[in-house]
Image (cartoon, rainbow, N blue to C red; front, side, top):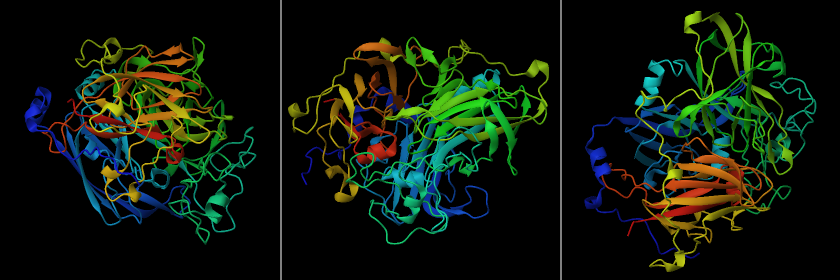
Length: 604
């Protein structure tokens, strides 16, 4: 196969360090150190006493929660004790390219191998980590964990009582675990919705591929090749599609798991539905909280394909609003209540609910109220995001909250839409507004580089189908096919730009389904959604994100600054230079080809 002639192997001279990097390097900062071991382990996901065979970081799924503050250096010694190659991608963190963990930034870490990641965290927010070497199987089987970055403004708002002191991480995913051979279900979800974690209702049932019986009785290996024997009980099957798969019904394994997991465990069932909740199943262990006490939930969607449409209802079925205070890029200027229709644009979920597309994170506040012993439930519901409309999943609980006592009237936590957060005059951190600055940077014509390369200077990145692709180009970055990651060829859909530039780019979803667009290495600011050149939704409140759900037929217009950062040594500039993947984070879409790259070149 052809070898590219552009390589990122020579560090830039330290003499060209920017003043900001020099000051940062001179400043005293904490180093957060972690030994992270990927290995198989047994973990009881559903509480029946028979553990499942999962893949873990440090023996648990999710892996350990990493906490850091802006300016800290995170130093991770990764050890791979899996039977397959792996890596660690620090999703959303603006790391140096050498620490991104992708196929085009490092070689595979082979079984028994080790790798050191070292990067500085520069933006507060909710992040997470997961493999990026054939991630569909590995994330599905349990390899994911949270990374939370805080700063002084967050502490100040908590001390002032603007944010609650009570906080919980809610990391969501789904999975299918095998039963004994011959006992696996022929439908992912029962036609009467009588699966253990979903109450009865009008759910129509799902017999679409791949069913648990197919996944477990006719399993595939990590490359999509068939295995000779069915999997034993407790196994987590592979779901990575074969490379020959070209679309639904053509051998693709597209999955919604039978079980919804919260922090690696199934939540106890509850009869009824969000608007008419019934009794809790035996063994439920709700989160206990006082009526009127503020509760901050850091929500993470670690699922490979499932959208979580979340609604909180009380013991009487009355909706309790979920107030958004932040997300992927830290706190917002003001409190927001999301959902509903806005000037002709329908979000597809109701006001006061929260939608998490795959890899999305949201920072929300709730104020549970009720009588002693009342139980509120956070439910996930079906959402219209597929090419066929409604995703076929039943409603399921993801968190139970039990009222235990009451706050004194003068201490009841109060929150409302538009309440000031970073806009508070007592906070000195403001969100940079890229939309109010001239976007002077442009994509480079790859044919006019000193060494011509494959690619395009088209600022519109087009998500294409029926075979998942970008610009009708099936993206393949196969690390296993090359001795060195720097030899992996560029694509006809690759984009090129100079470090330090401020770009305005577009992502046009020309397919019939939603896609969760993710850019590695750089947080970006969404400006607006367009249809046929007409604005249908404007993002009036500035925020930085790294993943955004783009509905069918919609074009996202966004700004991104290709800001430089130090290399792993913490002092040498040029850490932003390199190859950065961009892809749909519905992971089987990326595996099938909806993936490309933004190549950041030196300023000169």
